[in-house]
Length: 154
Image 1 (cartoon, helix red, strand yellow):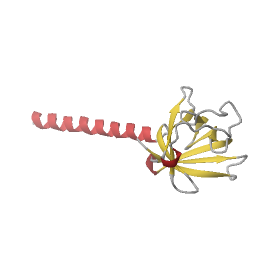
Image 2 (tube, one colour):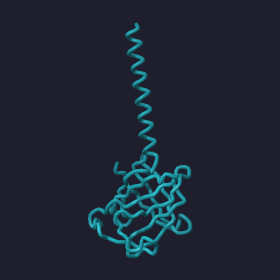
Image 3 (spheres, one colour):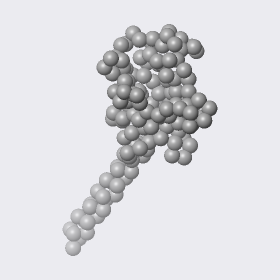
């Protein structure tokens, strides 16, 4: 009987560990932190790889890791930018800033479109168990904007 209880106890501990590990994996997927492949909302083609990180103050920022396909030009510069990013390399550029969790979304920040140099308000929400990120850039109110769905790469 003691042998049976020992095996049962080991199973309970193993089950508890697996449940805890699964919860940790879900918690990671419940945030935009990670690497994302952007998908152009007009053409449906992949454009870039973006790395989103926590800035240490509870806000998220996103940086261009590299372009994909025809957009993979390491020397491309943001010639249309009008702020301190004017003529800076797009590769390595921070294009998302100041995003804060707001319920099931991240809001309050901005996203730069390096193609036209325009800065938009931004809203991000996760879908498909954290495997898709819907990124909406807009001017004024969220109804006046456009959305892209990005795919998690990790």
